[in-house]
Length: 365
Ligand SMILES: *Cc1c(COP(=O)(O)O)cnc(C)c1O
Image 1 (cartoon, protein in one colour):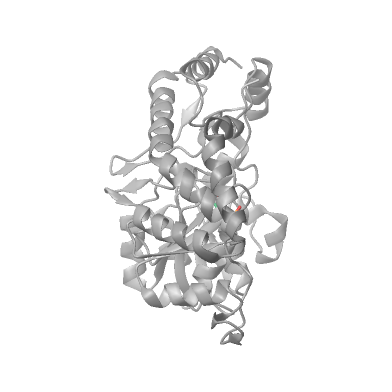
Image 2 (cartoon, helix red, strand yellow):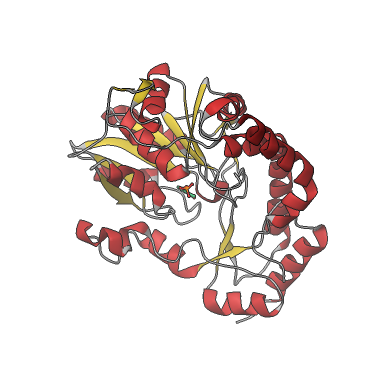
């Protein structure tokens, strides 16, 4: 069975490097924060082309920290795409602010800049865009709207490590960039991890205080903080895998391009990737008329597929009190009820890529 994603192949290939890195942390007992976590922060900031990266314990915390660093809280609203992983909205909700969901476009499946302005009120503080599936959203247009209304733009980069928008790294475009290193993301920890990237020292200081129990000087707590520190072992593992990321990204792009060029079946629709972007194919999502039928078909042929994501945020039970109903974000709803994610990960062999392509091309209803 070809899994949708198989992390064990990477571990088997790089076992020695990973275990040595973990051992080094153990030798120094630098388990929470510390030298290895700090070293990864520096390397990740350099990779993203920003002066600062603050490692945190997961991507959801990264989003929460970003919102807090901007002073967002009770009475505020933040614009969020309706089609994303739910954690994008959690970061907003944790502060007491309200996520306001906006539909995606019909073809790129990214936040639709033309539908943002109608959702802006005098309570709106920020637009939190998501580079969904590794495809950068239309940052230029979103930024233009934000500037016109005096709003911040924050990037959710949890699925897009290394993706480029007009030649620039995601995470370096907006006020703050939020990353996840959950296992299965393009860059991943051996456990949980996340990071917030930024250009401004004041945000970095705010976030390092928030994530570290509200203090810069031990036992002197200036604000109510959280325990959101990155673990030392995760920092050490991430420093190892950051060296592999460019190679992994090249291979993801190669596989993505094979799928785009060679899957030709009118029953399968793909995401549109605008010319001014270089996506990183975190998830290769297609739409088809009957996703359950397609997934069962692929399963029978020995390939695992799944759905990202079957319910859009505005229709999740957790947000029922916000009063959204079916029809509010039609493109996101269409995507949710028709999406299928094909197997794609850097260690896939070319034979496996071909097997996916052939199965897709042979698919009939
Ligand atoms: C994974 C993910 C998150 C959350 O990251 P965690 O590390 O799992 O907390 C947030 N937003 C998006 C778009 C994600 O894919």
